[in-house]
Amino acid sequence: MFEETKNRIIEMAWEDRTPFDAIEDQFGLSEKDVIIIMRRNLSLSSFKLWRKRVSGRKTKHRKHHVKNRYRFRSKNQI
Image (cartoon, rainbow, N blue to C red):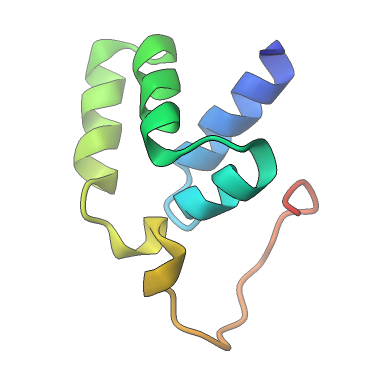
């Protein structure tokens, strides 16, 4: 995996409003794969903070998003 791609995946995973589904659509990685990448590339304390924040978070899963609500979308996202 290229460093630039890995950094973009980490950035998207860290964002509260970017669902795991968007990462899967763009990079073909499941939520489990993203967790592995985050575990390997963040310090232990940062990883624990991230996991605590995203565990059970509705905004990290597209099926829980409110439909027809405008949200800013980065040009980097498909």
